[in-house]
Length: 125
Image (cartoon, rainbow, N blue to C red; front, top):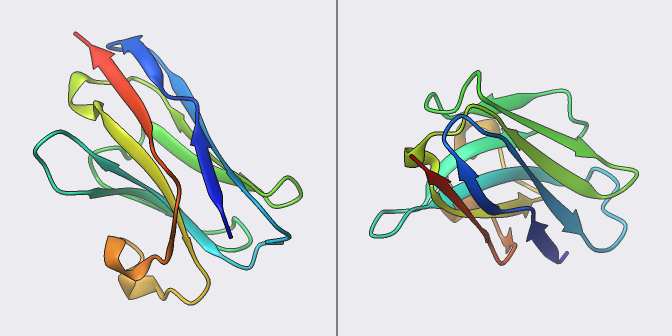
């Protein structure tokens, strides 16, 4: 499967952005999908993940209550709604997918096989 992330941009602190990740092919909910981010000079960090049907979601504590992950399997698209953005949210955001990932590994970037190209989110103070 190929992933294409979009929706990044420049926003002021307190603002909102919605990221999208379009998946090619007929994924039909076969993959666990997730968002990771990487700030300059830092390691890639788990942001959020969602189960195959969209019924289960998981968040990094740093974004809980501000970000919402969702998916539309009919459109083969993953979303990340980001509200109350902070300067520390500035990073390149990547979407990822994997068919066989298990719950204990859901926040481990090394367990995801498919990756999008990343979209830059910059939050100004």
